Length: 220
Image (cartoon, rainbow, N blue to C red; front, side, top):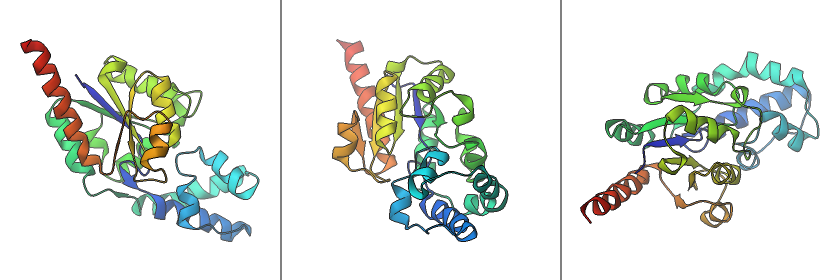
């Protein structure tokens, strides 16, 4: 029986790729760094921002992050858009009394979730400031499971990256991989995904299937 669904945020529930691309390129223009394509940024989303900037630009400077947060964060939030079926699936899960939360490698994720109007659906939203290690460490997923009050076997973790699936597996949680980011079905399965989906609305069929199986066990 599925009692809780924990989600990644960026490119799982929302398309933040255009917003992040514009924010990073604003930093690049201000600092004389190479500008990035959306496709390059898609490959970085889900990593801690310090790691992603060091990977793409060869170094990380704290002043870039300060500038990003002080100057570009508000415009970033305004350009993050929930995927078309995000609100509908969250409403369905709420009606079924299934706990929902977000566990993201983003810092200050609660602010972003609130800004796009999804916090009312969530029991919690946790990010890098809440744990010692980022995904693919299991720390975020384990904390999420603890906050749901459910057993790991009763939880799903939904994300769009290899790190998401690796984190779920390490936490003993079934990982559901979304191909809404930069990974294919095969990549996500190789990283440990239990199932992969093209649209978050298809989660409801997984829930229904689990309910049918539970009912059959009770009847037998």
